[in-house]
Length: 231
Image (cartoon, rainbow, N blue to C red; front, side, top):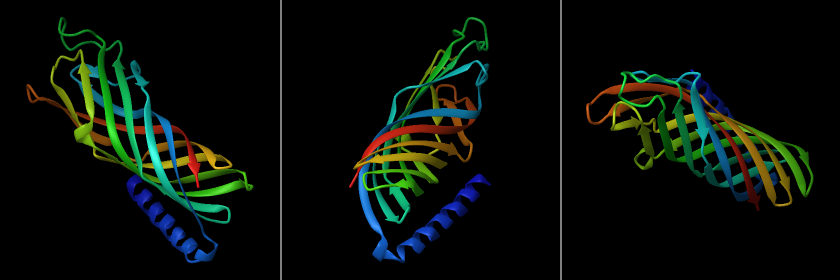
C-alpha cells in the first residue's frame, strides 16, 4: 500500500513538472553537485538467528556513510523540480548486547554484524523557496527517492554467531519519501534531509556451510547532511 501511494504521488509530481515545463520561457535551469554524510537507522526489525534477535538491547552504531550527487534543477518563480544521480556508501554496525547464545559454550553473548552497501539513488523532488533573494534563499522540498543497491559489492561481517559462514541476501531496491530543508548563500548551499522507508525489506540470512536459512525484515530511515554548489 505504501509503495502504491508513493507511485501515485510520483505521477502527480511528474504532471506538475510537465505543467511547469509548458511555460518554458520563464523556466531557469541550474545544475550542480553536492556531497554529504548520512546516518542510517533500522526500525521495525525482525531478526532472529537461533537465540540472537533484534530487541531493546540491540545497539545500532552508524559508521561514516557518504554520498556524491550531481543534480539538475528547473525553477519557475518560487517553485522548482530537482532530480539527482547519487552514488553512495552506507555503513552500519549491530551489536546484539546481552543476548544469550543458543547453547552454552558456543559463542560469546556479544554477536556483531557489520554491513557496508554501495548504492545508486534517484530522487524526484519538488521544492518551494519561502525566502528568496538574489544571494540568499531558504527552501523546503519533498518527493520520492528510489535506491538501488549493488549487492555484489556489499560487504558483510557476522562475528561470534554459532554459524561461521553467514551471508545476507539483500533487497536490491528500496523506496523512500524524502523531506528536507535547504539554505543557499550565493552559489553555496546546505541541505538537511530525512528519508522514510516506505516498505519493510525482506531478506534471507543463509549459512553457506550448513544451508540453514533465517529470515529478516526491517525498515530503514536515513538522516543526511550535505553541502554543494549550484551554477
